[in-house]
Image 1 (cartoon, rainbow over the protein chains, first blue to last red):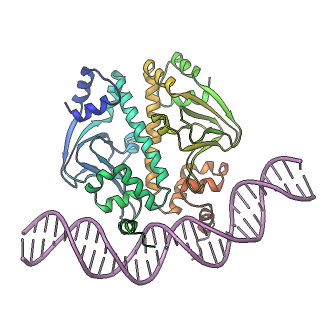
Image 2 (cartoon, rainbow over the protein chains, first blue to last red):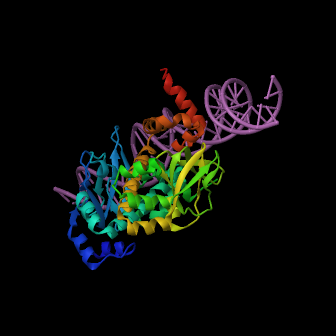
Image 3 (cartoon, rainbow over the protein chains, first blue to last red):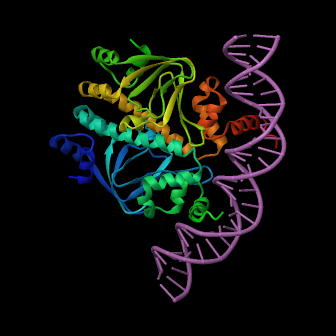
Length: 193
Length: 193
DNA sequence: AAATTGTTGTGACAAATATCACATGACTAT
DNA sequence: ATAGTCATGTGATATTTGTCACAACAATTT
């Protein structure tokens, strides 16, 4: 049942067949067409989502109507708005499918109930969050460097996803405009000087 | 024993006297003079640190010798390099005391042993990490905005710490130079136009 | 195929921020 | 008190990145 997720769990902890089954039984599969939303701003984020197939982007729309992409989610990634989830306050983010996408969702309260009876499950989520945290810690550092280095870093980590993303979205993720990214890509090729 | 930490724990979970005692017995208090290090680059980060008194900054020194502050730690904060901790690889960060500082440190292996016998303890660390994660998620967004908004956001969250920090460190945390921060502070006062 | 829509490239110019140089002021340690 | 160090303010200028306008191209729909 849900081999992608089961493997992901097995990568970090060992859980009984039994407990794994209990956990999987609480998951709900959700399918999205391109451009549909997993989360819309103003909504409280009550679920954590595991992407099985496809991809999503998480972004804020600022006061000037510009979209700021802060994160992507592809196969094997958990994604949600942790602040809204923690505080039950309306999210400022949208999480939108970039392509036909399937995710497994679990509700916060359900998950926390499970943690009590299956501590190994909390171990798993804790480890996953630690990895995510380490990633974000790295991103803070990268965002303090010039755009060209940010792009190089992005390609190192996510180069394999580049053909599934539009340049606009990559640019926004890097914190620059699409025009700047376009120039960066073309000038980096022939530094002509 | 360690009232600041005990209160912090009680804020999120309820733990037996007994278990709390077991946990506290594994902690070691470390005192630092100003400028001493909790972690130096090249070292593996094997501990998590809880600041009891004083403050520290976490920063990287880039190839041009410039310091990039990515995080602070003051009373009531856990701090470490999560990437180095997770992967047992040498850290690229330094964590340095900004003033006379006292922290409680716990070793990774010890902590993970305790998680097995005291699942509530893992609950606590998991929750603390979720809050930290939510914070960092927010920081990514802020780092995509103009410097003046980043500074405003910083003052909202950490205004009460501003007199304990040098402007250089604040500037670096915001991802700008000390000169730019200085101008920002002075121009924001009288927008003269 | 034509029309529509969305994405990307590029030029001219503007704005934000960095760099460098130096002055001032604050703090520390003799 | 006197150096000596360190943090901060400020001007002149350079660099990076954004903004706006428009063209080229691709994908999608009719």
